[in-house]
Image (spheres, rainbow, N blue to C red):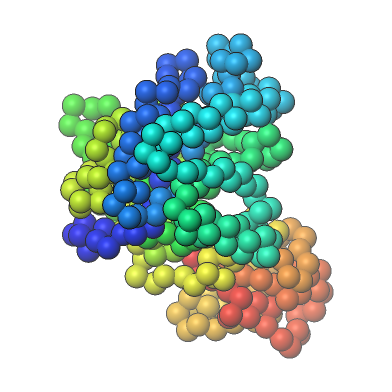
Length: 358
Protein backbone atom coordinates (compact mmCIF):
# COMPACT_ATOMS: atom_id res chain seq x y z
CA UNK A 1 0.00 0.00 0.00
CA UNK A 2 2.82 2.43 0.77
CA UNK A 3 4.12 2.33 -2.78
CA UNK A 4 0.78 3.75 -3.91
CA UNK A 5 1.44 6.97 -1.97
CA UNK A 6 5.23 7.13 -1.63
CA UNK A 7 6.40 6.47 -5.19
CA UNK A 8 7.67 9.33 -7.36
CA UNK A 9 8.29 11.67 -4.42
CA UNK A 10 10.29 14.70 -5.51
CA UNK A 11 9.57 17.52 -3.03
CA UNK A 12 9.68 16.72 0.71
CA UNK A 13 9.10 18.77 3.83
CA UNK A 14 10.85 17.27 6.87
CA UNK A 15 10.16 18.52 10.38
CA UNK A 16 12.80 18.05 13.09
CA UNK A 17 11.24 18.16 16.56
CA UNK A 18 12.80 19.51 19.72
CA UNK A 19 12.93 16.02 21.19
CA UNK A 20 15.37 14.78 18.53
CA UNK A 21 17.50 17.93 18.28
CA UNK A 22 18.26 18.38 21.97
CA UNK A 23 19.79 16.39 24.82
CA UNK A 24 18.44 15.60 28.28
CA UNK A 25 18.97 19.23 29.32
CA UNK A 26 17.02 20.36 26.25
CA UNK A 27 20.13 21.93 24.78
CA UNK A 28 21.16 21.39 21.16
CA UNK A 29 22.81 18.00 20.49
CA UNK A 30 25.27 18.48 17.57
CA UNK A 31 25.75 14.74 17.02
CA UNK A 32 22.02 14.18 16.57
CA UNK A 33 21.79 17.13 14.19
CA UNK A 34 24.69 15.66 12.23
CA UNK A 35 22.93 12.35 11.55
CA UNK A 36 19.74 14.17 10.51
CA UNK A 37 21.69 16.39 8.11
CA UNK A 38 23.33 13.30 6.63
CA UNK A 39 19.90 11.84 5.84
CA UNK A 40 18.75 15.03 4.14
CA UNK A 41 22.01 15.31 2.20
CA UNK A 42 21.50 11.77 0.89
CA UNK A 43 18.09 12.68 -0.54
CA UNK A 44 19.45 15.95 -1.94
CA UNK A 45 22.16 14.00 -3.75
CA UNK A 46 19.47 11.78 -5.28
CA UNK A 47 17.91 14.87 -6.82
CA UNK A 48 15.01 15.40 -4.42
CA UNK A 49 14.01 18.82 -3.13
CA UNK A 50 14.02 18.97 0.67
CA UNK A 51 12.66 21.69 2.94
CA UNK A 52 13.42 21.49 6.66
CA UNK A 53 11.16 22.85 9.37
CA UNK A 54 13.40 22.93 12.42
CA UNK A 55 12.74 23.43 16.10
CA UNK A 56 15.68 23.80 18.47
CA UNK A 57 16.37 27.55 18.51
CA UNK A 58 15.35 27.97 22.15
CA UNK A 59 17.38 24.90 23.15
CA UNK A 60 20.42 26.22 21.30
CA UNK A 61 20.15 29.54 23.11
CA UNK A 62 19.62 28.16 26.61
CA UNK A 63 23.22 27.12 27.12
CA UNK A 64 24.55 30.43 25.85
CA UNK A 65 22.36 32.40 28.26
CA UNK A 66 22.99 30.04 31.18
CA UNK A 67 19.60 28.36 31.50
CA UNK A 68 19.68 24.81 32.85
CA UNK A 69 15.93 24.42 32.31
CA UNK A 70 13.66 25.72 29.60
CA UNK A 71 12.45 29.16 30.77
CA UNK A 72 8.76 29.82 31.18
CA UNK A 73 8.59 33.61 30.73
CA UNK A 74 7.90 34.72 27.17
CA UNK A 75 10.64 37.36 27.16
CA UNK A 76 13.20 34.76 28.26
CA UNK A 77 12.04 32.30 25.61
CA UNK A 78 12.35 35.00 22.98
CA UNK A 79 15.83 35.92 24.19
CA UNK A 80 16.88 32.27 23.93
CA UNK A 81 15.35 32.06 20.46
CA UNK A 82 17.18 35.21 19.31
CA UNK A 83 20.57 33.85 20.38
CA UNK A 84 19.80 30.24 19.59
CA UNK A 85 18.56 30.74 16.03
CA UNK A 86 21.99 32.06 15.07
CA UNK A 87 23.72 29.13 16.77
CA UNK A 88 21.32 26.64 15.20
CA UNK A 89 21.89 27.96 11.68
CA UNK A 90 25.65 27.99 12.22
CA UNK A 91 25.51 24.28 13.08
CA UNK A 92 23.37 23.52 10.03
CA UNK A 93 25.63 25.58 7.76
CA UNK A 94 28.77 23.81 8.97
CA UNK A 95 27.25 20.34 8.58
CA UNK A 96 25.62 20.89 5.18
CA UNK A 97 28.78 22.51 3.80
CA UNK A 98 30.54 19.15 4.21
CA UNK A 99 28.24 17.88 1.46
CA UNK A 100 28.59 20.99 -0.68
CA UNK A 101 24.98 22.02 0.03
CA UNK A 102 23.89 25.60 0.58
CA UNK A 103 21.16 26.41 3.09
CA UNK A 104 18.80 29.34 3.46
CA UNK A 105 17.09 30.63 6.59
CA UNK A 106 13.35 31.41 6.42
CA UNK A 107 11.60 32.76 9.51
CA UNK A 108 7.82 32.94 9.25
CA UNK A 109 4.97 34.41 11.28
CA UNK A 110 1.30 33.63 10.87
CA UNK A 111 0.72 36.95 9.09
CA UNK A 112 3.25 35.93 6.42
CA UNK A 113 0.98 33.12 5.26
CA UNK A 114 -2.42 34.61 6.14
CA UNK A 115 -2.24 37.68 3.87
CA UNK A 116 -2.65 36.48 0.31
CA UNK A 117 0.12 38.53 -1.33
CA UNK A 118 2.62 37.61 1.39
CA UNK A 119 1.43 34.00 1.15
CA UNK A 120 2.27 33.90 -2.55
CA UNK A 121 5.57 35.70 -1.96
CA UNK A 122 6.61 33.16 0.68
CA UNK A 123 5.83 30.32 -1.71
CA UNK A 124 7.74 31.95 -4.57
CA UNK A 125 10.77 32.47 -2.34
CA UNK A 126 10.80 28.82 -1.27
CA UNK A 127 10.32 27.56 -4.82
CA UNK A 128 13.21 29.70 -6.04
CA UNK A 129 15.49 28.52 -3.25
CA UNK A 130 14.73 24.93 -4.29
CA UNK A 131 15.34 25.87 -7.93
CA UNK A 132 18.88 26.91 -6.97
CA UNK A 133 19.45 23.63 -5.07
CA UNK A 134 19.32 25.37 -1.69
CA UNK A 135 17.87 23.58 1.36
CA UNK A 136 15.51 26.06 3.08
CA UNK A 137 15.46 25.79 6.86
CA UNK A 138 12.24 27.20 8.26
CA UNK A 139 11.29 28.13 11.79
CA UNK A 140 8.62 30.17 13.51
CA UNK A 141 9.90 33.71 14.06
CA UNK A 142 9.79 33.20 17.82
CA UNK A 143 11.69 36.40 18.59
CA UNK A 144 8.78 38.63 17.54
CA UNK A 145 5.82 36.25 17.75
CA UNK A 146 3.85 36.49 20.99
CA UNK A 147 1.01 34.12 20.14
CA UNK A 148 2.81 31.36 18.24
CA UNK A 149 5.59 30.56 20.70
CA UNK A 150 3.78 27.65 22.23
CA UNK A 151 3.92 23.88 22.36
CA UNK A 152 3.44 22.17 19.03
CA UNK A 153 3.66 25.22 16.79
CA UNK A 154 6.19 23.70 14.39
CA UNK A 155 4.05 20.60 13.81
CA UNK A 156 1.34 22.82 12.36
CA UNK A 157 3.94 25.01 10.63
CA UNK A 158 5.40 21.99 8.83
CA UNK A 159 1.95 21.01 7.53
CA UNK A 160 1.27 24.58 6.41
CA UNK A 161 4.62 24.72 4.59
CA UNK A 162 3.80 21.42 2.87
CA UNK A 163 0.42 22.81 1.82
CA UNK A 164 1.95 26.13 0.77
CA UNK A 165 4.43 24.68 -1.73
CA UNK A 166 2.75 22.13 -2.17
CA UNK A 167 5.00 19.19 -1.26
CA UNK A 168 4.71 15.57 -2.37
CA UNK A 169 5.36 14.29 1.15
CA UNK A 170 5.55 15.56 4.72
CA UNK A 171 7.75 13.72 7.22
CA UNK A 172 7.59 14.58 10.92
CA UNK A 173 10.53 13.12 12.80
CA UNK A 174 10.03 12.81 16.52
CA UNK A 175 11.23 10.87 19.57
CA UNK A 176 8.83 7.92 19.09
CA UNK A 177 8.41 5.41 16.26
CA UNK A 178 5.03 6.69 15.11
CA UNK A 179 1.45 6.68 16.35
CA UNK A 180 1.43 3.98 19.00
CA UNK A 181 -1.41 1.79 20.20
CA UNK A 182 -1.30 0.70 23.88
CA UNK A 183 1.56 3.11 24.55
CA UNK A 184 3.72 2.01 27.47
CA UNK A 185 2.15 -1.47 27.68
CA UNK A 186 3.96 -4.73 26.81
CA UNK A 187 1.77 -5.13 23.72
CA UNK A 188 2.30 -1.63 22.36
CA UNK A 189 2.63 -1.39 18.59
CA UNK A 190 3.09 1.22 15.91
CA UNK A 191 -0.01 1.70 13.79
CA UNK A 192 1.28 1.34 10.21
CA UNK A 193 -1.34 3.47 8.45
CA UNK A 194 -4.22 5.83 9.21
CA UNK A 195 -6.89 6.58 6.63
CA UNK A 196 -9.15 8.77 8.77
CA UNK A 197 -8.51 10.68 11.99
CA UNK A 198 -11.54 9.94 14.15
CA UNK A 199 -12.11 9.93 17.90
CA UNK A 200 -10.47 6.50 18.28
CA UNK A 201 -7.27 7.73 16.62
CA UNK A 202 -7.28 10.95 18.66
CA UNK A 203 -7.49 8.95 21.89
CA UNK A 204 -4.18 7.29 21.02
CA UNK A 205 -2.38 10.65 21.08
CA UNK A 206 -2.68 11.09 24.83
CA UNK A 207 0.00 8.57 25.77
CA UNK A 208 2.87 9.79 23.62
CA UNK A 209 3.59 13.21 25.07
CA UNK A 210 7.24 13.44 26.08
CA UNK A 211 9.00 16.02 28.20
CA UNK A 212 11.53 16.30 25.40
CA UNK A 213 8.89 16.77 22.73
CA UNK A 214 7.27 20.19 22.69
CA UNK A 215 4.16 19.26 20.80
CA UNK A 216 3.42 15.65 21.63
CA UNK A 217 1.31 13.49 19.35
CA UNK A 218 -1.87 15.55 19.58
CA UNK A 219 -0.41 18.46 17.60
CA UNK A 220 0.98 16.02 15.05
CA UNK A 221 -2.52 14.72 14.44
CA UNK A 222 -3.65 18.29 13.83
CA UNK A 223 -0.85 18.61 11.30
CA UNK A 224 -1.96 15.32 9.75
CA UNK A 225 -5.47 16.68 9.20
CA UNK A 226 -4.05 19.62 7.23
CA UNK A 227 -1.74 17.41 5.15
CA UNK A 228 -4.37 14.76 4.43
CA UNK A 229 -6.98 17.33 3.40
CA UNK A 230 -4.40 18.95 1.12
CA UNK A 231 -3.80 15.61 -0.62
CA UNK A 232 -0.31 15.23 0.88
CA UNK A 233 0.82 11.97 2.53
CA UNK A 234 2.40 12.33 5.98
CA UNK A 235 4.67 9.93 7.82
CA UNK A 236 5.37 10.33 11.53
CA UNK A 237 8.49 8.38 12.47
CA UNK A 238 11.52 8.27 14.74
CA UNK A 239 14.29 10.80 14.22
CA UNK A 240 16.69 8.75 16.33
CA UNK A 241 17.41 6.21 13.59
CA UNK A 242 20.02 6.77 10.89
CA UNK A 243 18.00 5.56 7.90
CA UNK A 244 14.47 6.69 8.67
CA UNK A 245 14.03 9.02 5.70
CA UNK A 246 15.54 6.52 3.24
CA UNK A 247 13.34 3.72 4.61
CA UNK A 248 10.22 5.86 4.19
CA UNK A 249 11.08 6.73 0.60
CA UNK A 250 11.89 3.08 -0.11
CA UNK A 251 8.29 2.30 0.98
CA UNK A 252 9.42 0.24 3.97
CA UNK A 253 7.23 -0.13 7.07
CA UNK A 254 8.72 2.87 8.87
CA UNK A 255 6.56 4.99 11.16
CA UNK A 256 2.87 5.72 10.62
CA UNK A 257 1.59 6.71 7.19
CA UNK A 258 -1.38 9.09 7.11
CA UNK A 259 -3.15 8.50 3.82
CA UNK A 260 -4.05 11.65 1.88
CA UNK A 261 -7.53 12.50 0.71
CA UNK A 262 -8.21 11.73 -2.94
CA UNK A 263 -9.82 15.18 -3.12
CA UNK A 264 -6.78 17.45 -3.36
CA UNK A 265 -7.62 21.06 -2.57
CA UNK A 266 -6.44 23.74 -4.97
CA UNK A 267 -4.05 26.44 -3.77
CA UNK A 268 -6.68 29.09 -3.02
CA UNK A 269 -8.90 26.61 -1.19
CA UNK A 270 -5.93 25.51 0.93
CA UNK A 271 -5.27 29.16 1.76
CA UNK A 272 -8.87 29.65 2.90
CA UNK A 273 -9.03 26.41 4.87
CA UNK A 274 -5.75 26.34 6.75
CA UNK A 275 -3.95 29.67 6.76
CA UNK A 276 -6.45 31.74 8.73
CA UNK A 277 -7.79 31.94 12.23
CA UNK A 278 -11.53 32.33 11.67
CA UNK A 279 -12.84 35.68 12.91
CA UNK A 280 -16.17 34.19 13.92
CA UNK A 281 -18.70 31.43 13.24
CA UNK A 282 -22.09 30.90 11.69
CA UNK A 283 -24.31 28.01 12.72
CA UNK A 284 -26.53 26.49 10.04
CA UNK A 285 -29.52 24.18 10.01
CA UNK A 286 -29.48 20.63 8.67
CA UNK A 287 -30.82 21.68 5.27
CA UNK A 288 -28.02 24.17 4.73
CA UNK A 289 -25.44 21.66 5.91
CA UNK A 290 -26.68 19.11 3.38
CA UNK A 291 -26.75 21.72 0.61
CA UNK A 292 -23.15 22.71 1.30
CA UNK A 293 -21.67 19.27 1.91
CA UNK A 294 -23.55 17.13 -0.58
CA UNK A 295 -24.89 19.45 -3.26
CA UNK A 296 -22.05 21.93 -3.71
CA UNK A 297 -24.23 24.97 -3.00
CA UNK A 298 -23.35 28.42 -1.67
CA UNK A 299 -24.39 29.44 1.86
CA UNK A 300 -27.61 31.48 1.86
CA UNK A 301 -29.05 33.57 4.68
CA UNK A 302 -32.17 31.42 5.35
CA UNK A 303 -29.99 28.49 6.42
CA UNK A 304 -28.15 30.48 9.12
CA UNK A 305 -29.49 30.05 12.66
CA UNK A 306 -27.07 32.33 14.51
CA UNK A 307 -23.61 33.91 14.52
CA UNK A 308 -20.82 34.01 17.07
CA UNK A 309 -18.06 36.60 17.16
CA UNK A 310 -17.78 39.84 15.25
CA UNK A 311 -16.63 39.68 11.64
CA UNK A 312 -16.61 41.91 8.58
CA UNK A 313 -16.97 41.29 4.83
CA UNK A 314 -13.86 39.53 3.50
CA UNK A 315 -13.08 37.73 6.77
CA UNK A 316 -12.70 33.95 6.92
CA UNK A 317 -15.33 32.36 9.16
CA UNK A 318 -16.13 28.89 10.47
CA UNK A 319 -19.34 27.23 9.31
CA UNK A 320 -20.76 24.89 11.93
CA UNK A 321 -23.77 22.62 12.24
CA UNK A 322 -26.41 23.05 14.91
CA UNK A 323 -24.37 20.99 17.37
CA UNK A 324 -21.34 23.28 16.93
CA UNK A 325 -19.15 20.99 14.80
CA UNK A 326 -17.17 22.95 12.23
CA UNK A 327 -17.50 21.35 8.80
CA UNK A 328 -16.53 24.19 6.46
CA UNK A 329 -14.76 27.54 6.21
CA UNK A 330 -15.28 30.41 3.84
CA UNK A 331 -14.85 34.09 3.01
CA UNK A 332 -17.97 35.90 4.14
CA UNK A 333 -19.64 38.69 2.12
CA UNK A 334 -21.48 40.34 5.00
CA UNK A 335 -20.68 41.39 8.55
CA UNK A 336 -22.06 39.44 11.50
CA UNK A 337 -24.33 42.39 12.30
CA UNK A 338 -25.72 42.53 8.74
CA UNK A 339 -26.44 38.81 8.77
CA UNK A 340 -28.34 38.88 12.05
CA UNK A 341 -30.19 42.12 11.35
CA UNK A 342 -31.37 41.17 7.87
CA UNK A 343 -32.92 37.75 7.36
CA UNK A 344 -33.80 38.58 3.74
CA UNK A 345 -30.31 39.09 2.31
CA UNK A 346 -30.59 38.30 -1.39
CA UNK A 347 -27.00 37.40 -2.26
CA UNK A 348 -24.94 34.46 -1.01
CA UNK A 349 -23.45 34.94 2.44
CA UNK A 350 -20.53 32.71 1.39
CA UNK A 351 -20.13 31.92 -2.30
CA UNK A 352 -19.27 28.36 -3.24
CA UNK A 353 -16.00 29.50 -4.84
CA UNK A 354 -14.96 30.97 -1.48
CA UNK A 355 -16.01 27.96 0.60
CA UNK A 356 -14.09 24.84 1.64
CA UNK A 357 -15.62 21.67 3.07
CA UNK A 358 -13.27 20.36 5.78
